[in-house]
Each structure stands twice: as structure tokens, then as C-alpha cells.
Length: 273
Image (cartoon, rainbow, N blue to C red; front, top):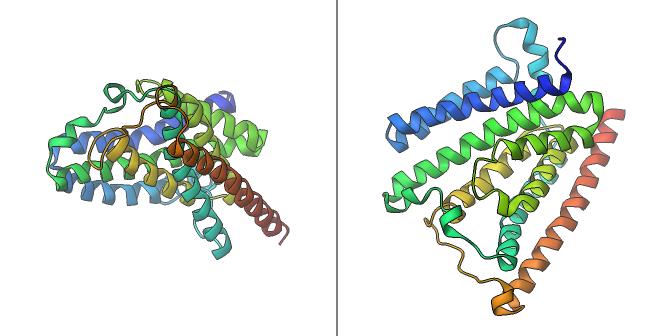
């Protein structure tokens, strides 16, 4: 308890996330893809149950329940939370498209999962689903749960979300592609942190995270469903594609703000009740 809360939360959040991600890494390297996904899905169920406060030790159960946030949500929160999750996933991918209409897309940097291009559809999609499922569950529990929630209680949402966002980016800094999309990555990470705060749940954020990782893994990091072929507007000029992407990005941000405001209003009403 002598360790400052910020440091303690960062270490615990990183540790909780890394446990799940490391298990997946071991499974995918030693067990055929489709079986590794099935086994990982079972492990994630127990992972979720333990880190939501099940089982011993009893002296950490309350802390684990607090960090996992709410599991049962009202229908109105679910509807708005899923709308926000969709907007986050949409904004991430259109934000990447916008980025690469300004600077040139570099497949040699981004295609870090290109090894799955030559695999069978079953195996390639098994890896994509396994990666997305594990990252979505473990990173949201670790960073938006165990890291962010304790900081929210002491420092408020903005400081907590800012810290969790910075740490989330730092743990991905080894990825060569991160530097070229640092701004959209920061915005998306901040948005998903705010979604966790506004709903007081990790579930909508997990859905958003899994969804965007499926697209990232199959489109941006590999060629399973295609690749980005548009050139920067410095070479092509402003065309209809660029105009549409800018419009979708701006509209997604605007709608997300509207949804979050509604969620915060519901949160305030529930706290009064």
C-alpha cells in the first residue's frame, strides 16, 4: 500500500492484461488454430469470472468486483453503449483511411500478420478471432478496468482516462505501425475509456475492441479481406472518397458525443435513484 496509486494501478492493469495475452500466445504457438481459439474461449470465461470477483482470495474479491465494473446493464444503457461501440469501431477504421489519404499507406509497416494470408480460411480466421477476442477481453479488463477504475475514484474520469490511454499506447509502442497513427489511436483509446466510465461497464468497450481488432487483423494487418489501395490526396487531389471519409469521421465523432451525453445523463439519474 506504500506504492502510489498511479504506479500500483499501472502495474496491476498491465499484469492483468498480460496474463491473458500471454496465455493466448502460448496456445496459438502450440495448438492448431481452431482448437486454440476454442480453448482460449474457455480460459477467457474463467479469466472473466476470477477477475470479476469469483473465488479466493476473499480479501481481494471486493477490489476485483469494483474493477470489473457493472455486468448487468439496463436496456437503455445497453442500447446506447452498443451504439457508442459501433461508432468507435467505425471511427477507428475511417480514421485510418483518412490518415492514409494524408500520408501514404505503408503495407510493409502495417502488414505484421501477413503470414496468415497463405493459410487456409479456417486457420486464418481462427487466428484473427483468437487475437481479437483475447485482446478485446484482456486489454479492456486490464486497462479500462483494473488500471482506470481505481484512478477514477480518486482523481476523476478525465485524469484516469488520460493515464489509461497513455499506458495503453505505450504498451503498443513496439508495433512499428503505431507511430504513423498515433493521433487517431489516442482519440480512440480515450473514447473507449470514456465509454467505460459513462456506462460503468466494460462490456460495450469489449465489443468495440473485439470488432475493431477483427477488421484490423483481416484488413490492415493482413490481406485476408483486402487491402487499402488509395493514394494520398497530394497525389490524387481531393476526390469523392476523401470527402466521404471526412464526413463519416466528423459525423461519427458528433454522434459519439451525443450518445455519451445521454449515457452520462442516465448514469446521473441512476446514481440519484
